[in-house]
Length: 598
Image 1: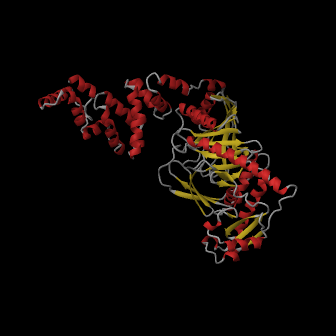
Image 2: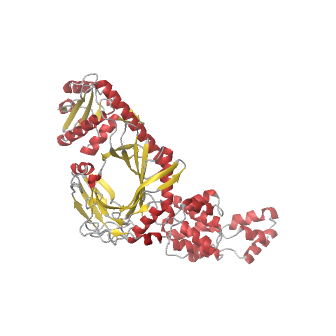
Image 3: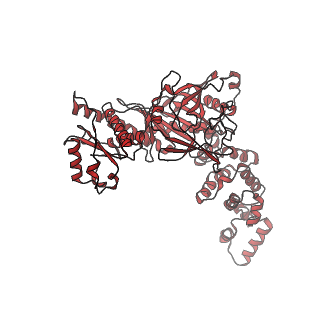
């Protein structure tokens, strides 16, 4: 197996890459929409990219939602891009240095053709910032081929009947792309590499966090196979499954190719005729088949092959269906190696169908329903994929499915998709400027330092956390106990979030206020969850006000002594005194202070 990974990580800049709009996706409702169509254009060398042609052939319309603070004429492609965001460029250079990469002398902005509608202009702006580099892993050094700075695409809202709706608040957010060499040894190693690159990016403290802010594309091939790019793996835990299933898929397609060579010998597979079979199913029990048009196609000598399992729940027939869905927009196909009674299709209907298309015992068939034009395009796509089966796995782009499997998206793009961006001048990179960039601690160094004050579990959590800068500030400046601070930030907040408490509304200032008030002795540790519950829902309220309204002020020594004396007079034994008082007043009493008083 050969495997390499591309990491795409959104940067935490204030502004977008080529305009002054906010780089934080909007929570507002859209104020307007625009509609566009797109066409495939030639790249720098005069060729049109195959992936672009594929998208253009689908003839879809695109709708774009506009938002007040995050959309301007640049996103709408009605105004040239502004100068490149200097903050984003500096972060990209910092990433290059952390990955031992050589920073380029001059940044050249390119246009990369993308006409699936995710960019209003029909292209994505991208620039190479660094070349070469490496990271060390448990299975040896993994090379870094290139580090790029580019625009994030639009976020998809929904799709229906040849029309896709996108939101423009995400378009243009700065994104760093890291492409490794094909040095990854196996599925576990792929996960390790992705995890290590993610840790290095988070160590900068300058990347966005949360679902969708980081994505992995995985390139995989096997002997006699082809390079396949699996797009959009967002879950680290799914990477091993993705690699394992894609390897098995390609290996099985190689075996199917061998079986076809045995079945056909020197004979060629003739492109099959498309036959209309609407009449056969006009009174069918299957509603699915009572459509205006049904077309069928015989696949000579393919009996049994369409049902060949590539991996769990994916067969060669599924691959044919993927092509029909992607290239013609049908819901799917029906083929002879399926359990046809599930549709339901009767044995008599199958017999008449086979007779009509001339299919014998060694032949398979494919059936598709819908309008005539769409059905014709679907069977053309199926025929294309059948012919490819004689060649083995194909170079293509596939999307990740929830179970870690993949499905066909489009052909593999090539250099024909690139041409220069004439609206952004080149940016010279000064060696002196690069040498002046201050680098953060590497993850290994940070962990070693944290292990001196935290246990391993907490050290792992806080070193990768977006709360790490706050942790350092509270522990370093306020001198609050490290374990308590880490537990509050990484366990208490997580636990409250799971309960549905909107803790994401708490900014750094509010949390800093919490630790200051604690340090001043206003409340005890046990009260913190209750205080956070209240201020999460009332963000304008101060911590001290919340403590007062909840009646959670820490008991002073005099009040403690009074309670202890009352309990003694009531006959509570010394052995159970602490437990009883803590049970009744735990949100206001510090156990150590109570012990001293007793």
